[in-house]
Length: 370
Image (cartoon, rainbow, N blue to C red; front, side, top):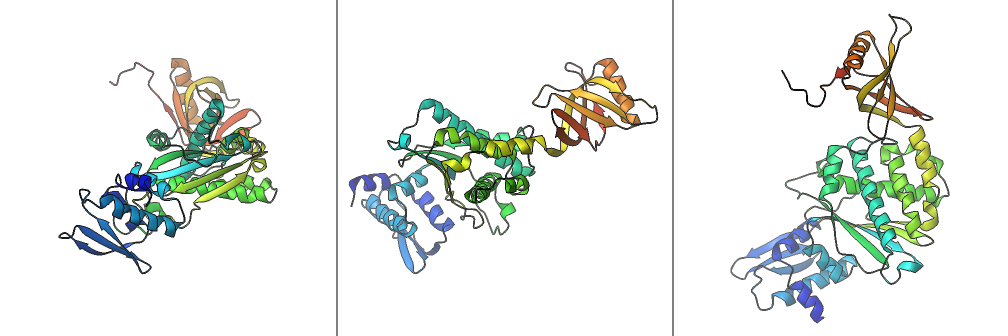
């Protein structure tokens, strides 16, 4: 037996190994405290897991189990050990296979671009999981930002250049039949893989237009823009997304585990992203800022205001009914910020908020409640 494999296997603890077995469908057959062994069975195959790391043959016995699992799953034993030793989570591998990465390295600037694009892909998938839209003017939802902050980068793997990003996933406890029962991190990774698979299928047929109607599937302009930004790194090679699903939950059945893009299929996605951005219609958007213009020709008619905010969307035209327009006048006179929620649309360079649900005057910074 390979000495390196045995040495690596000695680091694997009984808990994570059994957690992995259970999530992959193995059933506990017998647990003997006197022998210090737990037996698991799947498809007529039985494996014995030593429960005490102080056993003299612990490393050899674990290495035998690792070898069997690797053979059954058709993957390298060292990759399996890496999954068992890393923090618990869905490990997203982003592989660049090109002439320039055959030695397993990537230029620094391209590496930074790859990581930024991956972050934006996860952000886009997270926002689509919360509320699927064709385009997100701001990817700043608290849940999405918190998830990104929790992602860890794992050790790069061999095979051209493979960067790994570990998305934390909580364990499955009890019977969870609905995909919505899965934790947010698992749903985001599943959404991302399903979305990029949808893009790949459209581009494999040489098409673009279908991408304009896939917002409900997580194919947002933000996701397409992030994918296109990877084209500069991929060049004439290929881009692969692959997931090693967390050891503490069953593998999701609805999401793919691997998607491959030829480099040329990434071209043109920026144009589709621009189209989605230009026709973006976003509901339930909260706009905060200062009223800089008031306009109402008839006292009995709805009034128009322009709100300026310090964000990606700089100025927004808003139509208000009489009572809200009166509040806007007062806020304008006093220099107080306002908040209004509605449907945000963009035509050309102009942003408009329609179907507003009411205007709220906000306290200025430094104001105290009284």
